[in-house]
Length: 107
Image (cartoon, rainbow, N blue to C red):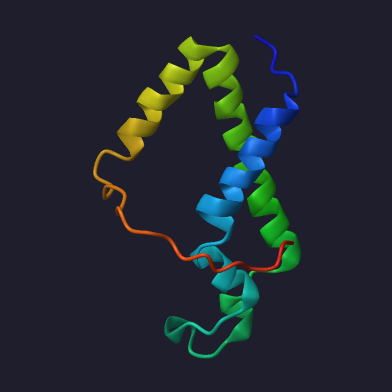
């Protein structure tokens, strides 16, 4: 089935990436906040704006594809979920705590 653009799903994908991924620890790397493991070498602990854009674009594209499949091609979506569950079998379960309302600047 050929995937098409669904503006509502696109907006949902972008919002979910921002809330679940972009506004987390990767933003600290992007902002260049020092990491002890990097021994003060800024070129190691900084993600450039272009690299951040590519990361976010990739995440949005992947999430959009999955949301689209969930909506329009449920059999393929379930196949992907089966694969994803195999990757995450030993991951920690989500923590049930309130997230902070800290906002970072959009890029």
